[in-house]
Image (cartoon, rainbow, N blue to C red; front, side, top):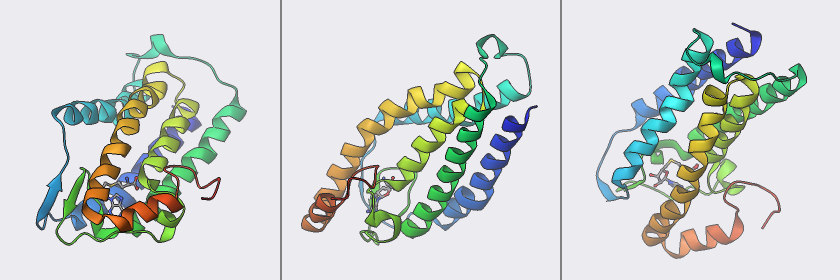
Length: 194
Ligand code: SAH
């Protein structure tokens, strides 16, 4: 195991233990107003998970994926470490700002409020932005077409189609408030400032 593999594992542990599991524990389905889910979502989410968390272990701890390895200069991997760190930081911030409005699915809960503060004041989808940063960092850390690049290849179409659906749902529920929030922010990038 190389240093970048080890850093990837440490990052995954920080994310799972420090950020994701506490969020899932705080999530209780109170009452649900709307649930926007398609059958295809489950398939895509599962395959994202396979490329995000499972394939890397086959790459790090075995030879199964070694036919798809590539080489990368060290400096490129160190840039990956920086992007990876930014991703974990943004995940932490976004989950904290979203609080109990967070859900692994696309839904509106009865006690849901519209969050427009914290990192949500700069971008509308900080959780997905964090995921994008992770998906960009992963092929720089894990030098394998499947374990590294697979995530980005799957994640991009999944979330580019998900964001408009989520925004449509939020607009239907929060109306004017979400529309004016959309006018003030971009989806994923804080610049140019609207
Ligand atoms: N797309 C957001 C949130 C991902 S979590 C992001 O990338 O940060 C998905 C849940 O967040 C959905 O169930 C949706 O109802 C909720 N949500 C998304 N934006 C929200 C906002 N500004 N305020 C409150 N809830 C929001």
